[in-house]
Length: 467
Image 1 (tube, rainbow, N blue to C red):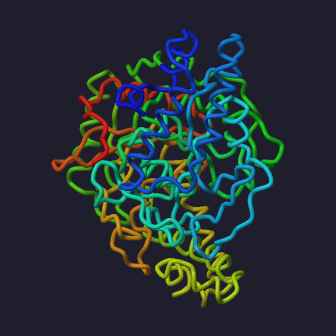
Image 2: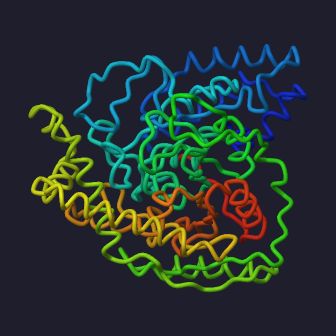
């Protein structure tokens, strides 16, 4: 977008469409132009559908002229992560092993909801092989880079969505999360992301911990997007009962006085917390206490055995996928991923896998119990700052590939809503987010507290601009 248009939120765009101060066609054209400027540097898009986007924008413009928009988001540009099926688009799931994948025959539930809302779908964003390892490195897409510093990683697996949001491709982005995959790119790219309660946003196929969540620059835009995404879809057999609520209503109404907030500065598992990350989280907790919240520092509930069990479970799951491929396709998988999912999982017994699963369930129980005494829990989102863009994981070691997910993965498995919101920046200008965790099913509460944090956080820097 032009510099003035790319700064507008989804809420601001729709107000401008209603008042006829802006046209969806004008906004879509500016978005496509901004993508063209950034893409040689970022590589955030897998597919760009310029002609289709302009046609959708033209149809939206006609609806606004008649005063008949499909929703409050009609005409607003959106990107969709590659693994969320969109009719007619192949979804290789980030890996060259699936080169030549057949086009999807139908929209997945989240894609169907934004299409029904009249959003303008700009295209599909990148992800790493099979959505694993929380990085921007893919055997089919190449390297997706961080707009704040091109030599830094976006994290992942919603890597392209995080980069696209920070770079201003669109106000709205759809990512997926099973261990931190919307929240980790959010903290490393300086944006907001909500991992909803499992089943709140219908997905297909559903799986343990798998959710689709909004990735945006503002909390309000995420709330508006949740209004569309949370609508029911019978294909998701793990879908929660539909709540016909407006997630943006009451967003401003949180009174922090008396709220009980557990502050967890360290998980004591995985990577050590960077001093600048710790300081940012402590500052956020202090700011909430200054506003009247009852903030109590709490210890970690996560053991090394639980995190190791989670890692083994992911390895076993991916090894099973890997074994389904013929030898020539196995050779196309990113070598890091191939080693990660085979170096020990190839020798796992059924007993090993069930022992790992038992640790995952123990982690789930511990997470829920740790949060139960509090209205919310606050923590760092990631223990580290963005690492090297070319690396598949922080240490680039396939035999220790997931030490950085200790703050995020427990709340994927416990099915609790959790969000990452930027708080400040490191001394060298890299974003630092904090994580807000709610009790199960309290997605609206997490959005309200995140909006309050958004209002009291330090002055934010201007968004990055193309080199």
